[in-house]
Every structure is written in C-alpha cells, then in structure tokens.
Image 1 (cartoon, rainbow, N blue to C red):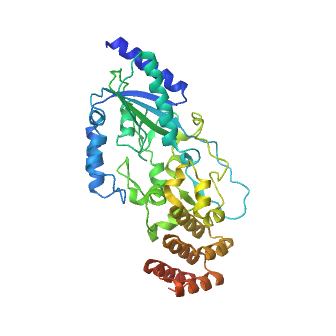
Image 2: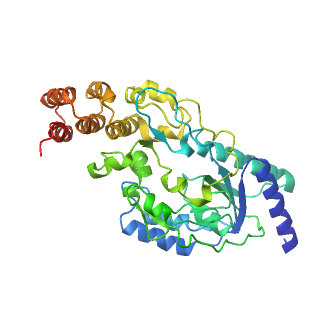
Image 3: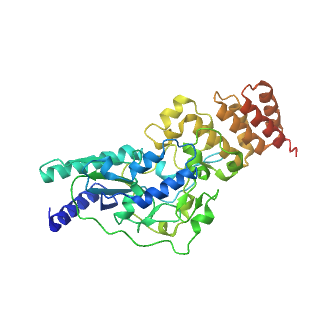
Length: 384
C-alpha cells in the first residue's frame, strides 16, 4: 500500500471512529515502546504496584510489544471516549455524602468501548472487502495504551501521569492492533512546564518523578485494587472518596472550560449518583450491592471493599449522625469491614461509640479486628 493509500485509509478510519462517538482517534506504528517498558520495569522494581500481582515484568515486556500481542501487526489505532460530566451538584440528602470517580458513574467502560471498537472493525471489513487481522485492548489486556495514545498524537503525559489532550484528561482509551499498514500520526511534543497543581493537590503525595504514580499511596488504588486494610496513616486522606479519585484531574488547567461530551453510557447514573449518601451504602448486603452496581465499574471493589471505604469516609465526615449506623455495622460479617468501622467510631468518639466499641471488643475473635477495636477505643476515650 503506497503512502497516499495508507493516508486515505487512516482518514477513513478516523471519520468512522468519530461517527461512533469517540472523541479522540489517532494511529501509530506497531514498533515496541522500549523507553516506556524501561520506566514500567523500574516502577515494578521499586514496588510501586502494591498488591497488583498481575503486573509482572513479563507482562510489562509483552505490553510494550504490539507485534508479540498480534504477530504481523503493523499499526495501532487508538481511540478515546470522553467521560467528562457536568459540574456536580450535591444532592439534597440527609447525612454525609461520598464521592465516586467520574469514570465509574456510568456503565462499565471495558464492555462499552470494546463493543464500539468491534463495530469499527466490522465497518472497516465492509469497506475493505476483507477482514483485517486485529486484536482489541481496553485496559484489562496487556498493552501500554497511554503510551500508544501519546505516540499516536492524541496528547502528552501530564505530571499526574494522565494523557492530556486539548479536550482535557477525562478520557478512556482503547486500542486496535492490526496488520494493516496505516499512515501514523505525529506525537505531540509538549509538557506541563512549571505547573505543579496536581502534585500539590494529591492528598497522599502519590505523584512523583514528574509523570508517575506510586500506586501504594494513590486513592484510586487504595479504594479499588487494595483488598486488605487501608493503611491507618492514609485513611484520613481519603476524605469522602469511596471509589477512585479525581483530585489531580479536577485541578488540572486542561480540564477547565468545555470539553467533548461524554460517550453515551458513560454519563453518571441517577442512582447511586456521583455523590451518594454514605449511610445507606454502609448497610448494603451482598444482594443489594450486586443489584445497585450491576454493570458498573464499582463492582470491582466488591461489597467488602466498598463498605470498607464507606466506613472510612464516615469516620472522616465528623458527623455524629453516622454513629448509630456504624454501631450496627460492628456486626458486619466481614472482618475487613468491622475493623474499619471501629476506626471510624474512634474518630467520631462519643458515649455511644465508646460503649459499642467496648462491647464489640469483648466479643471479637479476629486478632486484626481486635487490634483495630482496641485502638479505636483508646481514640474514642481520648487516651494518649
């Protein structure tokens, strides 16, 4: 295929992708991402991945080599779907509210993007008269999608590690690796200059080295990927975030003003909404959790993880109205939840909290929960 034909086909693909609702589309070669691979391997050696055991050196090397993911690959088509939402207005709800990251407000983006990318491949097949070899990637499979997006000219890495495009960073990425030879786009040569708003705003100081994130300190990791207890010293920094975090994006100048509209399906659901009432979430059993978050990214945290996060947010709320619900939650079947509920009661203090903590301590058999209860009781009594 000559240069003119490669460019014409690339332009056709971009038009079709935009017609399917993708705010961004760009093309790069299937050459390996060697510099990104070295950065990823260094990140792993430093232990920045926390408990995400699937992020191995072998996986990172594979993710940096499109031709090993699809033998014979020559191009990577990268698409971006906007999940930018209208400014949030706190609902008129009784009791403290939590916050859910914007990307998780609608349908599960993995399925949503993959389905539209499959339609794009079908249209491409019809256009060519023959089905090209392709492999689709949406976050859960090994490909350095942000690196591909940057090399495809869709934006540049910000100091918060997000891809910054002219329309902002509220974008979910997908990639189609193909054996078609397409005209590649030119990478954007740009950086954040002296701006450090995201670095200063990060509640836990998780951003480092100008472009990287220490997952072990990131609120998104702590509220989603971490399966065990949240480190005690980091719990106050969660504030009222119960699934993910948008702080580093909210302060970014690239997200000011208007941007592309969210892809259908990524708009926030009315229930539970981006700022749900915390006490009802604390009282969710497994059946109600599954029903409320069916088809939502929030289900990844599982019921025990989300309720753990809700307990921490209630402890951070300073609202004594949360105490009765927290007292009831001391009987939760999950030790992980009971331990964080104890911490929350220790933060809120008061006679009811002290009495409930004493009673729970007398009955608790799990050693870790007993330690949490004892520490919370001391805090609630204001014992040095």
